[in-house]
Amino acid sequence: MPGMHMLPCPDAYRSPFRHPDGSYDWRAELDYGWSLVDAASCGALCAVILEPILSSGGMITLPAGYMRAMKAHCEQRGMLLVVDEAQTAMGRCGDLFAIEHEGVVPDVLTLSKTLGNGLPLSAVMTSDRIAAVAREKGFMFYTTHANDPLPAAVGLKVLQIVLRDERAVVRRAAAAGKVLHEGLRRLMGRYACIGDVRGRGLMAGVEIVQDRRVSKGPAIELGRRLSAKMMEMGLSATISARSYFSGCLRIAPPLVVTDKQLEEGLAILEEAFRVTEGSLPLY
Ligand SMILES: Cc1ncc(COP(=O)(O)O)c(C=O)c1O
Image (cartoon, rainbow, N blue to C red):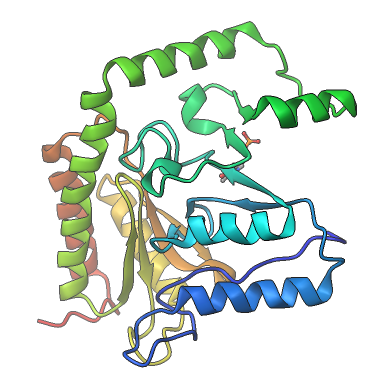
């Protein structure tokens, strides 16, 4: 859209910004991105919109410290920080809100999918000060479901349950996430077509590539075949099989998933990699 700028995606796997030891230099990339935005804009933009984990964009987790550095960039320019937690909130990433992981308080927080737990519900939260300005300027929040009492009641109940059963839901998501990520990394040790495993809690991405280290080129067709094989074996593993997303399996099981169910899912993943041609087994 005119007037909209984009910062580089903080992709630790693919970014060309590197420290001498090869590790990802996200700070240099972020500062460089801002220098481009500053040069191409009036320098008084309104806000940055950011997800704690770029969910549909390939489950790309923000590096530690990134959100805090982003907030500092915003403050320096008098801009607001809007954090979109449509996919990450309500415990999925091992914290009630994913922003808690970094301890950053955004100016505006948006919630959606996980708040309604299946019903169409979203929420925008902000400080009293910003809300007062929005009201004064006559900003409008308008959708078919505005003021719909049924999804609102469901959202309230979801919040009550997640807060009441924090141990069973939020902390459980963190623990189950460990099982999931360990299993996926084991698989990565075995199949060279897995370029990267990333995410946090019960949100994981498995990137399918042609080769892990040199071209890192997306293996879209292979990803599609793997995903279809998993479905055939009873596991729905969505793949963002578009060239601009690379080929990333996006895994986000229900928060109440048991370790046994996770192991079952991981076994199907493993079997699909074993029987699908082109998965590049290492042993
Ligand atoms: C990160 C993120 N933000 C916003 C949206 C849009 O949410 P809604 O459909 O509730 O407006 C989505 C849905 O796809 C999303 O994944």
